[in-house]
Image (tube, rainbow, N blue to C red; front, side, top):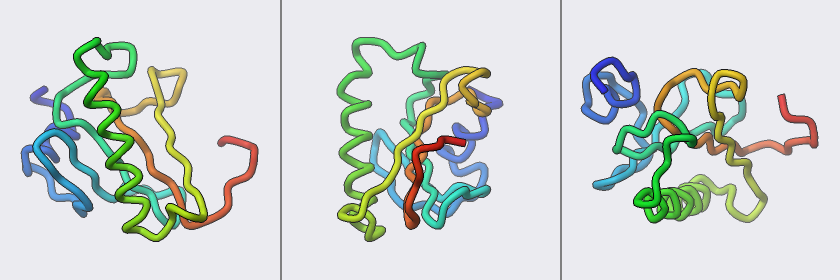
Length: 114
């Protein structure tokens, strides 16, 4: 997508603090963190939201969770715990139309989700 900010980050048109990259996935620090560790993990394939996932995306989404565990280990939060959050659609809080996973850690989270 030509006007997607995440696609521009993937294409290196916009700088980011890259944490991880392979042929299908990238991860970078969120510019507006809500936790000491706040990393966005996204597929390079443009998928607008979870609603648009197709059968062929199952392996990719599974791989994203494997990458999240790898990053959590590298960031030192694997054992203590972390939160993975995915917003879907306007009412779900999704502000960028490219499916993305928020990896949050470095603090204890309560039951309340803000």
